[in-house]
Image (cartoon, rainbow, N blue to C red; front, side):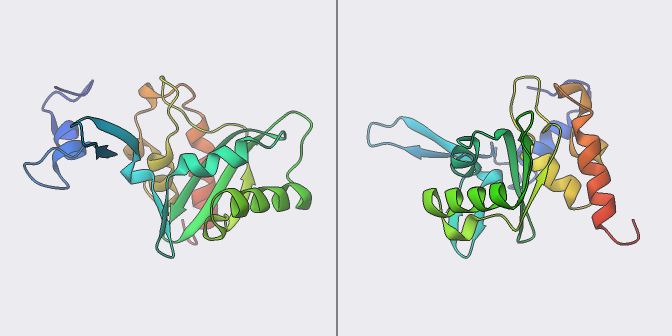
Length: 176
């Protein structure tokens, strides 16, 4: 097993064996059923824990993406700050009404604790070539990691989408 352009396997080992030395950590939450089968529940590194209430990001996306004005979204929790980034349908605007709708839908469909602290409109959210959201790399970028260390642009369907998040992180970090 190896990553592309990782000749010595350092990135592969760091990704899967660094957290628990010698033990493979895949990053998914699974449930082993009484039949011995596994049910995929979600990504462990994308679970948001606010006030002791754990919720997968997909549970937050469902009510947000049900709103007609929103076509895509990405949510991250950076050290207790919950930020939601939304791609708006053409002609829609992120005003007080849409903010209130987002908060109400998440509060009612998910949890009052998971209503975002801030909501931002973006042109696009970064995705891998296979369409997966880059929640963890965006979280790392917002935490101060350079985009090149957070994600491989070669693996992205829209690498320029990371640039917005990098600029946003620099603007929010005093002295950066």
